[in-house]
Image 1 (cartoon, rainbow, N blue to C red):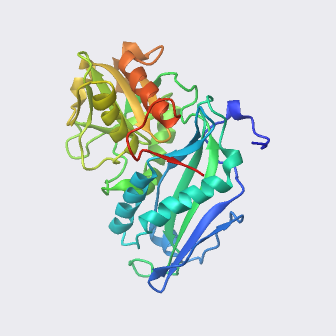
Image 2: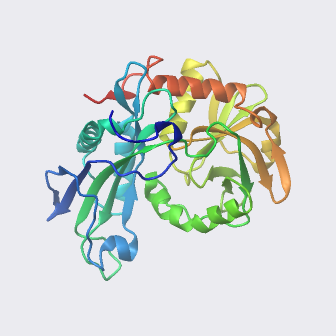
Image 3: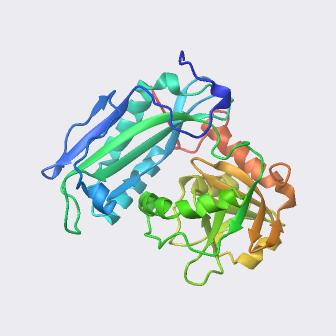
Length: 340
Protein backbone atom coordinates (compact mmCIF):
# COMPACT_ATOMS: atom_id res chain seq x y z
CA UNK A 1 0.00 0.00 0.00
CA UNK A 2 2.20 2.78 -1.30
CA UNK A 3 -0.33 5.22 -2.72
CA UNK A 4 0.02 8.85 -1.67
CA UNK A 5 -3.48 9.15 -0.20
CA UNK A 6 -4.61 10.72 3.07
CA UNK A 7 -6.56 7.64 4.14
CA UNK A 8 -7.89 9.22 7.34
CA UNK A 9 -9.58 12.11 5.54
CA UNK A 10 -11.21 10.43 2.56
CA UNK A 11 -14.54 11.85 1.44
CA UNK A 12 -17.09 10.09 -0.73
CA UNK A 13 -15.78 11.16 -4.11
CA UNK A 14 -13.98 9.94 -7.20
CA UNK A 15 -10.27 9.20 -6.99
CA UNK A 16 -8.80 7.67 -10.11
CA UNK A 17 -7.31 4.22 -9.62
CA UNK A 18 -4.99 2.36 -11.97
CA UNK A 19 -7.23 -0.24 -13.60
CA UNK A 20 -10.81 -0.80 -14.75
CA UNK A 21 -12.70 -3.59 -16.53
CA UNK A 22 -14.41 -3.25 -19.94
CA UNK A 23 -16.55 -5.66 -21.98
CA UNK A 24 -18.56 -4.90 -25.13
CA UNK A 25 -21.78 -6.44 -26.42
CA UNK A 26 -22.18 -6.64 -30.21
CA UNK A 27 -23.92 -8.99 -32.67
CA UNK A 28 -25.82 -10.63 -29.85
CA UNK A 29 -22.93 -11.58 -27.58
CA UNK A 30 -20.46 -10.23 -25.05
CA UNK A 31 -16.76 -10.23 -25.93
CA UNK A 32 -14.16 -11.67 -23.57
CA UNK A 33 -13.62 -8.40 -21.74
CA UNK A 34 -10.30 -6.98 -20.56
CA UNK A 35 -8.57 -4.92 -17.90
CA UNK A 36 -7.47 -1.48 -19.08
CA UNK A 37 -5.75 1.60 -17.70
CA UNK A 38 -7.82 3.94 -19.91
CA UNK A 39 -10.55 5.72 -17.94
CA UNK A 40 -12.08 7.49 -20.95
CA UNK A 41 -15.30 6.48 -22.71
CA UNK A 42 -15.84 7.52 -26.34
CA UNK A 43 -19.42 7.54 -27.63
CA UNK A 44 -21.33 8.52 -30.73
CA UNK A 45 -23.43 11.67 -30.26
CA UNK A 46 -26.60 9.61 -30.78
CA UNK A 47 -25.66 6.74 -28.45
CA UNK A 48 -28.62 5.10 -26.75
CA UNK A 49 -27.42 6.10 -23.31
CA UNK A 50 -27.25 9.77 -24.30
CA UNK A 51 -30.61 9.90 -26.07
CA UNK A 52 -32.81 7.66 -23.92
CA UNK A 53 -30.76 7.08 -20.74
CA UNK A 54 -30.52 3.34 -21.34
CA UNK A 55 -28.14 2.57 -18.51
CA UNK A 56 -27.99 0.88 -15.14
CA UNK A 57 -25.38 0.50 -12.43
CA UNK A 58 -24.46 -1.17 -9.16
CA UNK A 59 -22.40 -0.24 -6.13
CA UNK A 60 -20.44 -2.41 -3.71
CA UNK A 61 -17.27 -2.20 -1.64
CA UNK A 62 -14.01 -4.00 -0.93
CA UNK A 63 -12.65 -3.89 2.63
CA UNK A 64 -9.36 -4.63 4.34
CA UNK A 65 -10.05 -6.96 7.25
CA UNK A 66 -8.51 -7.17 10.70
CA UNK A 67 -6.08 -9.84 9.44
CA UNK A 68 -5.18 -7.70 6.39
CA UNK A 69 -7.14 -9.70 3.84
CA UNK A 70 -9.12 -7.85 1.17
CA UNK A 71 -12.73 -8.97 0.80
CA UNK A 72 -15.96 -8.04 -0.97
CA UNK A 73 -19.40 -8.21 0.62
CA UNK A 74 -22.05 -10.32 -1.15
CA UNK A 75 -21.11 -9.49 -4.77
CA UNK A 76 -23.44 -12.23 -6.00
CA UNK A 77 -26.39 -10.11 -4.80
CA UNK A 78 -25.16 -7.15 -6.84
CA UNK A 79 -24.74 -9.39 -9.88
CA UNK A 80 -28.31 -10.64 -9.51
CA UNK A 81 -29.74 -7.17 -8.97
CA UNK A 82 -27.93 -5.80 -12.02
CA UNK A 83 -29.34 -8.66 -14.09
CA UNK A 84 -32.83 -7.63 -12.96
CA UNK A 85 -32.09 -4.02 -13.90
CA UNK A 86 -30.84 -5.02 -17.36
CA UNK A 87 -33.94 -7.10 -18.05
CA UNK A 88 -36.19 -4.21 -17.01
CA UNK A 89 -34.42 -1.88 -19.47
CA UNK A 90 -34.30 -4.40 -22.35
CA UNK A 91 -30.54 -4.65 -22.05
CA UNK A 92 -28.52 -7.86 -22.39
CA UNK A 93 -27.69 -9.41 -19.02
CA UNK A 94 -24.00 -9.47 -18.21
CA UNK A 95 -23.46 -13.05 -16.96
CA UNK A 96 -23.47 -13.13 -13.16
CA UNK A 97 -20.41 -15.37 -12.89
CA UNK A 98 -18.48 -12.98 -15.14
CA UNK A 99 -19.70 -10.04 -13.06
CA UNK A 100 -18.17 -11.56 -9.93
CA UNK A 101 -14.96 -12.49 -11.78
CA UNK A 102 -14.63 -8.93 -13.12
CA UNK A 103 -15.19 -7.42 -9.66
CA UNK A 104 -12.48 -9.63 -8.19
CA UNK A 105 -10.04 -8.83 -11.02
CA UNK A 106 -10.52 -5.07 -10.75
CA UNK A 107 -10.06 -5.13 -6.97
CA UNK A 108 -7.00 -7.36 -7.25
CA UNK A 109 -5.40 -4.98 -9.78
CA UNK A 110 -6.19 -1.97 -7.56
CA UNK A 111 -5.29 -3.67 -4.28
CA UNK A 112 -3.06 -0.78 -3.16
CA UNK A 113 -6.09 1.53 -3.24
CA UNK A 114 -7.98 -0.48 -0.60
CA UNK A 115 -7.78 1.67 2.56
CA UNK A 116 -6.16 0.33 5.75
CA UNK A 117 -8.26 -1.51 8.28
CA UNK A 118 -9.95 0.46 11.04
CA UNK A 119 -10.47 3.82 9.33
CA UNK A 120 -14.08 3.35 8.26
CA UNK A 121 -13.01 3.65 4.62
CA UNK A 122 -13.30 1.21 1.73
CA UNK A 123 -12.71 0.74 -1.99
CA UNK A 124 -15.98 1.59 -3.72
CA UNK A 125 -16.71 -0.54 -6.79
CA UNK A 126 -18.99 0.79 -9.53
CA UNK A 127 -20.16 -1.71 -12.21
CA UNK A 128 -22.29 -0.07 -14.90
CA UNK A 129 -23.69 -0.73 -18.36
CA UNK A 130 -24.99 1.52 -21.12
CA UNK A 131 -26.23 1.53 -24.72
CA UNK A 132 -23.45 2.61 -27.11
CA UNK A 133 -24.64 2.50 -30.72
CA UNK A 134 -26.55 5.37 -32.41
CA UNK A 135 -30.30 5.31 -31.73
CA UNK A 136 -32.90 7.74 -33.07
CA UNK A 137 -36.26 6.05 -32.63
CA UNK A 138 -37.40 5.14 -29.12
CA UNK A 139 -36.09 1.60 -28.93
CA UNK A 140 -33.36 -0.40 -27.16
CA UNK A 141 -29.80 -0.08 -28.39
CA UNK A 142 -28.14 -2.99 -30.20
CA UNK A 143 -24.69 -2.56 -28.67
CA UNK A 144 -23.63 -2.06 -25.05
CA UNK A 145 -20.61 -1.61 -22.86
CA UNK A 146 -20.16 -3.03 -19.36
CA UNK A 147 -17.51 -1.37 -17.21
CA UNK A 148 -16.22 -1.41 -13.64
CA UNK A 149 -14.16 1.31 -12.01
CA UNK A 150 -13.11 1.76 -8.39
CA UNK A 151 -12.39 4.61 -6.00
CA UNK A 152 -11.27 4.70 -2.36
CA UNK A 153 -13.96 6.41 -0.28
CA UNK A 154 -14.71 7.54 3.23
CA UNK A 155 -18.14 8.00 4.87
CA UNK A 156 -21.03 8.99 2.58
CA UNK A 157 -22.41 11.42 5.13
CA UNK A 158 -19.83 13.89 6.39
CA UNK A 159 -19.15 13.55 10.09
CA UNK A 160 -19.22 9.75 10.06
CA UNK A 161 -21.55 8.61 12.86
CA UNK A 162 -22.96 12.11 13.51
CA UNK A 163 -26.78 11.94 13.30
CA UNK A 164 -28.36 13.37 10.18
CA UNK A 165 -31.53 15.34 9.53
CA UNK A 166 -34.18 14.42 6.97
CA UNK A 167 -37.08 16.39 5.57
CA UNK A 168 -40.31 15.23 3.97
CA UNK A 169 -40.44 17.21 0.70
CA UNK A 170 -43.71 18.43 -0.79
CA UNK A 171 -42.94 16.84 -4.16
CA UNK A 172 -42.10 13.37 -5.43
CA UNK A 173 -38.72 12.30 -6.72
CA UNK A 174 -39.96 10.53 -9.87
CA UNK A 175 -42.12 7.61 -10.88
CA UNK A 176 -40.36 4.43 -9.66
CA UNK A 177 -39.35 1.70 -12.07
CA UNK A 178 -39.00 -1.29 -9.80
CA UNK A 179 -35.83 -3.30 -9.51
CA UNK A 180 -32.22 -2.61 -8.72
CA UNK A 181 -30.47 0.53 -9.84
CA UNK A 182 -32.75 0.84 -12.87
CA UNK A 183 -34.88 3.00 -10.64
CA UNK A 184 -31.93 4.51 -8.87
CA UNK A 185 -29.94 5.23 -12.01
CA UNK A 186 -32.77 7.18 -13.61
CA UNK A 187 -34.32 8.61 -10.47
CA UNK A 188 -31.05 9.90 -9.05
CA UNK A 189 -30.99 12.40 -11.90
CA UNK A 190 -34.65 13.24 -11.32
CA UNK A 191 -33.96 13.73 -7.60
CA UNK A 192 -31.00 16.09 -8.01
CA UNK A 193 -33.21 19.16 -7.70
CA UNK A 194 -34.75 17.73 -4.53
CA UNK A 195 -31.44 16.96 -2.84
CA UNK A 196 -29.85 20.28 -3.82
CA UNK A 197 -32.89 22.08 -2.43
CA UNK A 198 -32.73 20.00 0.77
CA UNK A 199 -29.07 20.92 1.28
CA UNK A 200 -29.86 24.59 0.75
CA UNK A 201 -32.50 24.31 3.47
CA UNK A 202 -30.02 22.69 5.87
CA UNK A 203 -31.12 19.05 5.59
CA UNK A 204 -28.92 16.05 4.78
CA UNK A 205 -31.50 14.13 2.76
CA UNK A 206 -35.16 13.82 1.72
CA UNK A 207 -37.49 11.18 3.15
CA UNK A 208 -39.83 10.22 0.33
CA UNK A 209 -43.39 9.00 0.84
CA UNK A 210 -45.36 6.75 -1.50
CA UNK A 211 -46.46 8.67 -4.57
CA UNK A 212 -50.01 7.27 -4.57
CA UNK A 213 -51.19 8.41 -1.12
CA UNK A 214 -48.20 10.31 0.34
CA UNK A 215 -48.90 8.66 3.69
CA UNK A 216 -46.35 5.83 3.82
CA UNK A 217 -42.58 6.05 4.29
CA UNK A 218 -40.49 4.62 1.45
CA UNK A 219 -36.80 5.63 1.34
CA UNK A 220 -34.44 8.56 0.96
CA UNK A 221 -32.72 9.72 -2.21
CA UNK A 222 -29.64 7.60 -1.60
CA UNK A 223 -30.49 4.98 1.04
CA UNK A 224 -33.12 2.74 2.56
CA UNK A 225 -34.50 3.40 6.06
CA UNK A 226 -34.81 1.26 9.16
CA UNK A 227 -36.57 2.04 12.46
CA UNK A 228 -36.45 0.56 15.95
CA UNK A 229 -39.62 0.40 18.05
CA UNK A 230 -39.75 1.11 21.78
CA UNK A 231 -39.77 -2.64 22.43
CA UNK A 232 -36.63 -3.13 20.29
CA UNK A 233 -38.23 -4.51 17.14
CA UNK A 234 -36.44 -3.62 13.90
CA UNK A 235 -38.84 -2.54 11.15
CA UNK A 236 -38.30 -1.33 7.59
CA UNK A 237 -40.72 -0.06 4.92
CA UNK A 238 -42.31 -2.63 2.63
CA UNK A 239 -42.82 -1.35 -0.89
CA UNK A 240 -42.23 -2.61 -4.43
CA UNK A 241 -41.15 0.86 -5.54
CA UNK A 242 -37.99 1.22 -3.43
CA UNK A 243 -34.48 -0.01 -4.07
CA UNK A 244 -34.09 -3.63 -2.89
CA UNK A 245 -31.09 -2.81 -0.70
CA UNK A 246 -28.58 -5.59 -0.08
CA UNK A 247 -27.43 -3.83 3.08
CA UNK A 248 -30.98 -3.59 4.41
CA UNK A 249 -31.65 -7.28 3.76
CA UNK A 250 -28.36 -8.15 5.44
CA UNK A 251 -29.23 -6.03 8.49
CA UNK A 252 -32.61 -7.70 8.87
CA UNK A 253 -30.86 -11.09 8.82
CA UNK A 254 -28.31 -9.86 11.36
CA UNK A 255 -31.09 -8.58 13.61
CA UNK A 256 -32.84 -11.95 13.64
CA UNK A 257 -30.00 -14.46 13.48
CA UNK A 258 -27.15 -12.70 15.29
CA UNK A 259 -28.93 -10.43 17.77
CA UNK A 260 -32.10 -12.42 18.40
CA UNK A 261 -34.34 -9.45 17.68
CA UNK A 262 -37.72 -9.36 16.02
CA UNK A 263 -37.46 -7.85 12.55
CA UNK A 264 -40.16 -7.22 10.00
CA UNK A 265 -40.76 -5.51 6.68
CA UNK A 266 -44.14 -3.77 6.58
CA UNK A 267 -45.93 -0.62 5.50
CA UNK A 268 -44.98 2.30 7.77
CA UNK A 269 -47.22 5.35 7.92
CA UNK A 270 -45.69 8.77 8.47
CA UNK A 271 -47.65 9.28 11.69
CA UNK A 272 -45.91 6.22 13.19
CA UNK A 273 -42.56 8.00 13.29
CA UNK A 274 -43.36 9.43 16.73
CA UNK A 275 -43.60 5.87 18.06
CA UNK A 276 -40.07 4.83 17.05
CA UNK A 277 -37.06 5.33 19.30
CA UNK A 278 -34.36 4.95 16.63
CA UNK A 279 -34.02 5.65 12.92
CA UNK A 280 -31.13 5.10 10.53
CA UNK A 281 -30.29 5.12 6.83
CA UNK A 282 -28.71 2.01 5.36
CA UNK A 283 -26.99 1.17 2.11
CA UNK A 284 -23.62 0.36 0.55
CA UNK A 285 -22.57 4.00 0.75
CA UNK A 286 -24.37 5.00 3.96
CA UNK A 287 -23.63 1.68 5.73
CA UNK A 288 -25.82 2.49 8.77
CA UNK A 289 -26.08 6.20 9.52
CA UNK A 290 -28.17 7.40 12.50
CA UNK A 291 -30.98 9.88 11.94
CA UNK A 292 -31.61 12.41 14.69
CA UNK A 293 -34.53 14.31 13.24
CA UNK A 294 -37.19 14.25 10.52
CA UNK A 295 -38.94 17.50 9.61
CA UNK A 296 -42.39 17.04 8.08
CA UNK A 297 -43.49 20.44 6.75
CA UNK A 298 -42.34 22.30 9.84
CA UNK A 299 -43.20 19.55 12.33
CA UNK A 300 -40.10 18.09 13.98
CA UNK A 301 -39.97 14.38 14.79
CA UNK A 302 -37.04 13.63 17.07
CA UNK A 303 -35.23 10.37 17.75
CA UNK A 304 -33.52 11.26 21.06
CA UNK A 305 -31.35 8.12 21.14
CA UNK A 306 -29.77 9.21 17.86
CA UNK A 307 -29.30 12.92 18.43
CA UNK A 308 -25.84 12.65 19.97
CA UNK A 309 -24.83 9.12 18.98
CA UNK A 310 -26.18 5.90 17.52
CA UNK A 311 -29.05 4.34 19.41
CA UNK A 312 -28.40 1.11 21.29
CA UNK A 313 -29.97 -1.25 18.73
CA UNK A 314 -28.63 0.65 15.72
CA UNK A 315 -25.14 0.44 17.22
CA UNK A 316 -25.45 -3.31 17.72
CA UNK A 317 -26.59 -3.73 14.12
CA UNK A 318 -23.75 -1.56 12.86
CA UNK A 319 -21.09 -3.30 14.94
CA UNK A 320 -22.28 -6.75 13.89
CA UNK A 321 -22.55 -5.98 10.17
CA UNK A 322 -19.19 -4.22 9.98
CA UNK A 323 -17.70 -6.93 12.19
CA UNK A 324 -18.74 -9.48 9.57
CA UNK A 325 -17.36 -7.33 6.77
CA UNK A 326 -14.05 -6.71 8.56
CA UNK A 327 -13.39 -10.31 9.56
CA UNK A 328 -14.05 -9.92 13.29
CA UNK A 329 -17.29 -11.97 13.27
CA UNK A 330 -17.94 -15.25 11.49
CA UNK A 331 -20.06 -14.50 8.40
CA UNK A 332 -23.01 -16.45 7.03
CA UNK A 333 -22.00 -18.77 4.23
CA UNK A 334 -21.33 -16.94 0.97
CA UNK A 335 -21.42 -13.40 2.35
CA UNK A 336 -17.69 -12.74 2.14
CA UNK A 337 -15.57 -13.21 -1.00
CA UNK A 338 -11.81 -13.00 -0.45
CA UNK A 339 -9.69 -11.37 -3.14
CA UNK A 340 -6.73 -13.67 -3.81
